[in-house]
Image (cartoon, rainbow, N blue to C red):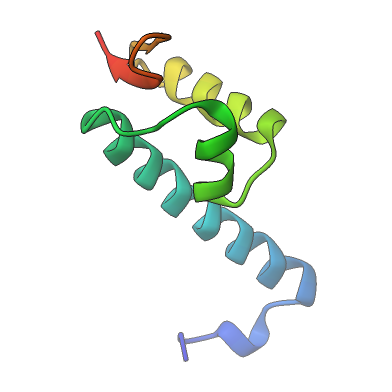
Length: 81
């Protein structure tokens, strides 16, 4: 157990878990894009256990962080350009 973890309120614990979960999903999404193996949006949502709306929010977040992300309709994958 983390030092002081028992001092957190239930709301703080939920936020901490949500933040950690989102960060790990963003990291995984970056890896999939790097290897150009994301598949289409529906497939990617299933892999990340998120909705389509959340997926597009995640991609927007990455773009705001400076990642240049494109999508190839032929190969059905996201890529960095």
